[in-house]
Length: 347
Ligand SMILES: Cc1ncc(C[n+]2csc(CCOP(=O)(O)OP(=O)(O)O)c2C)c(N)n1
Image (cartoon, rainbow, N blue to C red):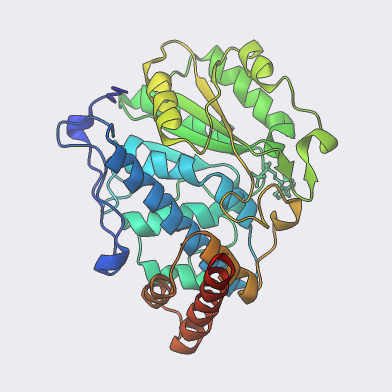
């Protein structure tokens, strides 16, 4: 696949992970001449990055004892693609006027955003262990005080309207940045989403890309039970948008979609990304119970083991995030026990 994004020569993406060498996220995956990943090893790097981010999301939520794992895990490849391949941004200069803007409209899924921002160097990895604690800048819903966060969100339905304003401001100011807004599918029940959809098409905001995390679950029920959204693509088309529908966990499919969105002139694009809520953890996948519930420490160990984390990796990552040594030993020990038990079963 030869996908070449716009103006990549000017990109300012720099990997600034504060983790130890073993835990470091890969450097930005496009090559110096600006082409996007094409090789198997580059895609493997992206998949490894997503796995690492899933691990740290679960650690942060378990330590907090509350939070939203389901929608943080479903959005993960979307965020990884954006922050490692697509966005023109500079973690050392979060308010750079020409940066591309990413707006997390489904603000409850901020653990996913926090993990990727931390690994890109917007703030120290250790901050992840303060998630949802008093005095932390990493609150339970995205807050504009956090470096890299563009909008305080959590009251669903508002992000797309905000994103249109940001995109139109870029037009008025003569800047070339692009604007991205990530919405939940349940969030599309909000009337404000459709007012925004109508106005983005009216004003031909072709620098705007909306992404709908189509995981089929909202809160404690399936979206089709609460409010039938289908035919969702037809609705967006009827509102004047270009519609793309990639597999939301496939990096090549997402990259192609973002490239096509960037090429679209005269209308905004929506990427309806087909995803699995709780992706990567068997007992969370497609399970409404894990929309807004933290795993127990025992469940965390199982989840980490399923993600393929060794006890050594768990130990290193928990230490890097700032967990006390007793907690590190407990979780790494549990992961080790599960690994031994699994090995016993398969031998
Ligand atoms: C205006 C508003 N109403 C209700 C809520 C409570 N709420 C939080 S998350 C959620 C479900 C969101 O589902 P979806 O948009 O599909 O998110 P995802 O499944 O991706 O987590 C609801 C109703 C809210 N945050 N804001």
